[in-house]
Length: 422
Image 1 (tube, helix red, strand yellow):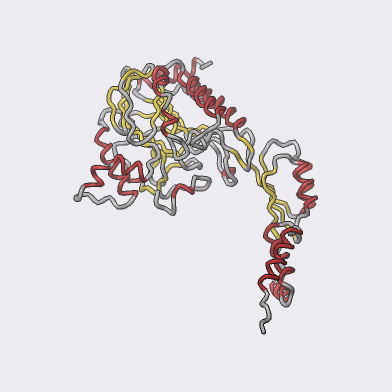
Image 2: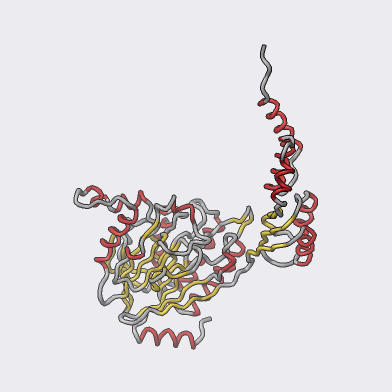
């Protein structure tokens, strides 16, 4: 239940002309880590997220892409998403705006739009999506077109630019006329994005709250833990100054580390709610509560999220220490990457013992101590190639080479030996 104090606080905001947003992104429902499902953790997060939205009594919830981890999510993930949207809606009293990220199937995401309208839910699949005008719960979409909506409820009004993941193909589709014009040369991805936002900026109004929600990578952002693969060698990078100056707040998704873009405090990544990769354990996870009032600084409050099964990196100086640490923490609820300094390969029996003791070890990475350089050069000199390769394999993999691999190597060596000719 929402406390009286929270309700009073909200009505004070409304009387003063504030609009309260909750900004989140990168849920990746249905994601796995090294083959292990994260759905149980995601379900716990969504329960807490619903409580956060209700306790803060948000006016609008922005979900900035990558709702799912794949274009064909499991049924359980979809059920979690729709159940959560219904709870957030609170019978249509609260507006929720959802855009597609690069992991989402735009058509599949927006397929429930007709049913979602009465609950105050708006789903946007691509930059060309046009949201039908009409009543969305207690809110009304009074004006809309490709990439924008104007929403209102009593004295509250906002223009929201909605730009789901803008791939090269989708940008070409939405900027077709400009791409064909001889007067305008749009050679780079950044130039096309700038053209898109310049066009959409015409929809902003001086007296409304002006918001952008998008899923892309802005230059100078810290990308640790982000979806790096989508950058394709740096081609999917955007300058922070592509966003219109009239924007009061820019809600972004795609990078998993929460942050504001350097020099632009109102351009924000909420980050992912759960630690999805090794490296993400280094910083807190959060959603953002944003209060906006025209003519005043935007107030952004990070709300830190609990990690239900955090990622931990255990660094040990020996194999025996690693086994002992596993025994001491056998009941600890966490995912584990185990790094072990060692002078030899870790034996299969030792690996088995660690994994049987601590069930959620995701990776065991041996860090082999280097031998003295002169000693190493001497030890490699004049030794049979199979023996040298076996040591190399042991250093790289941390385990002994199997008999099958050794036999295959010997066979290849025999085939490469020169044959005598008459």
